[in-house]
Amino acid sequence: MFRVVHFSDLHLGVENYGRLDPATGLSTRVGDFLRAFDHVIDYALTQQVDLVLFTGDAYKNRDPSPTLQREFARRVVRLREANIPIFLLVGNHDVPHASGRATTLDIFHTLALPGVYVGNRLGLYRVETRSGPIQVVAVPWLSRHRIFGREDLRDKSLEEVNRALLDWALSRLDEASAGIDPEWPALLAVHGVVAGAEHGSEQSLMLGDEYTWAQSDLARPEFCYVALGHVHRHQVIRRASPPMVYAGSLERVDFSEEREDKGFVVVEIDRDEGGRWAARFQFRPVPARRFLTIDVNIRSDRPTEEVLEAIEGYPIADAVVRLRITIPHELQPLLDVGAIRRALRPARYEVISRILVGRPRPPLTLLTCPNCGQEYQLADAADRRCPKCEVELVYHELDPIRALEFYLSRQNVPAERQNRLLSLARQLLKELTAEVV
Image (tube, rainbow, N blue to C red; front, side, top):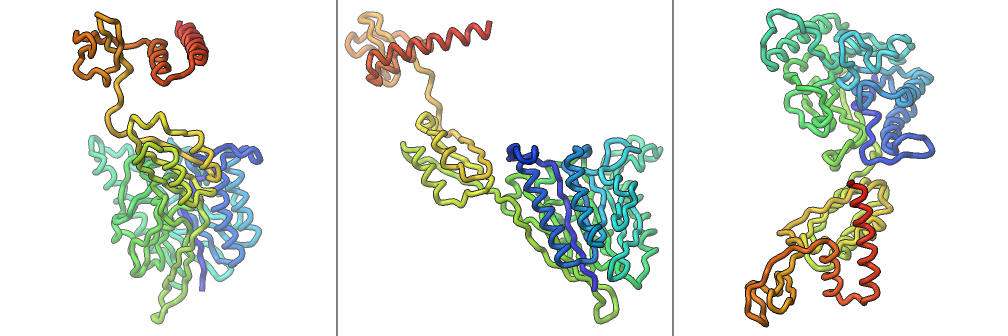
């Protein structure tokens, strides 16, 4: 029996919702991704599996920093030291912008490290394991530059170009499949979209328009398991032999993956009753960083207390928390954001957003009686006439200092404090005016 660990879409370098870790100089989110990666490596080592199969997208972008490359290589070395081979399939985030440039994984191919295989071309690879050879047909991300320059594709639509690319790949897949030795198990590793897959956050990470594989193109009897990469949501596309499985990504990229389990797939390969190689598989979750959304709909004139009470009902410790507060415009000044942030301190990271509902209040304005000089707010003189003189009031909008003065007087602020606040306000406006000039 053979045991294989299938994982995918590491995307090392994602820093969403992270802070600088002074101990490492890296984003705390990079630390999350590395811990998830370590969980896979630790499992492979303790269980002494035969092969670790990675189906693409090692890094977030095509030009990873030397530090990220070092951290990835450290985990590969751990497997090599334990004599566990690893197969690295090239994904779309591993492919360079221009033809002829190296992929992010080609360094392992160049170094020719024993036990490290790089699937950077569509073809058949023979991987030596402690239980015998495993055959892997690799289908890395297909770049359109492979068919650029063909005269028959000039002025063709993108859909027609994608179809030509798939036809090119299918012919080479036929050639690779024909070379499989039935004496040993064969796996198909594909980085791409298969019809029927449910997308996740990878849609926001796409680096171009997608092409789609038909399930019938990949469901070939020569294979006992089809390992898929590129889609971040773990899912089983096909359970019948050969099963087609997306391992999914190891860590959450954003809140679109909040409710998704993250992990890897353990595949056991043995001969069935008919003597054919068959695979059983099981998904194993990793302790990925929790993402948590808290929605609060303010229904009273105590918005801060409502939010704090809502937070108390959630397990926010060490989670990336998104707090969404739906609040009427007129209650927004009563919201103590500082107190809310203090309540969220146990969280790993917090995002606070306010959704304002209802009509905003108009700018502070006054209606002045031309006869007695009395000033009124709009709400105090809805009919636009002076209650004393019965004459029509004159509308005018207040400047900032006059508006503050009127507000403080209506709030019964002591005169001494009013004068101090007005003096500070004038000084602040003067400084702002000088900066603009």
